[in-house]
Length: 127
Image 1: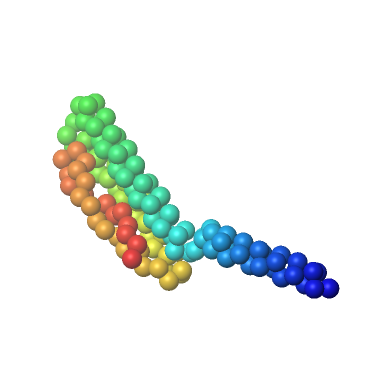
Image 2: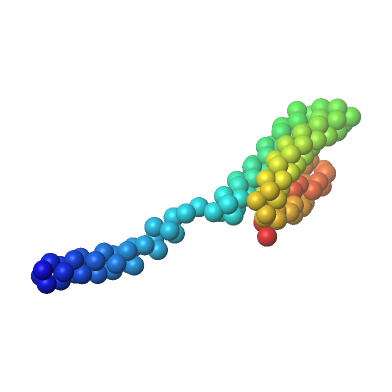
């Protein structure tokens, strides 16, 4: 009986040691809501900057077509309007979702030059 008790205590001690060594790494893999929001902030910012690059390219293409100045101004205005609609809706959705999780995400406006105009686009920042 003493041998069996000794074996049970030994096995128990080994199990406790293993749980102590490897236990915290198991819990470190848990994903929190703030981790998810931070990843979404990064993805949204990437989306905003890619959309700006596309808008700049579109404006350059229109300038190279040598349109009349009145038409060119209207075309560039439409490109800018479309850019702002896309980026603002994406960032606003992220801000709303983050607020529901209790995380504050704000817009941080950045100046961007498209053709001859300076506009403000809105990447975001999580607090």
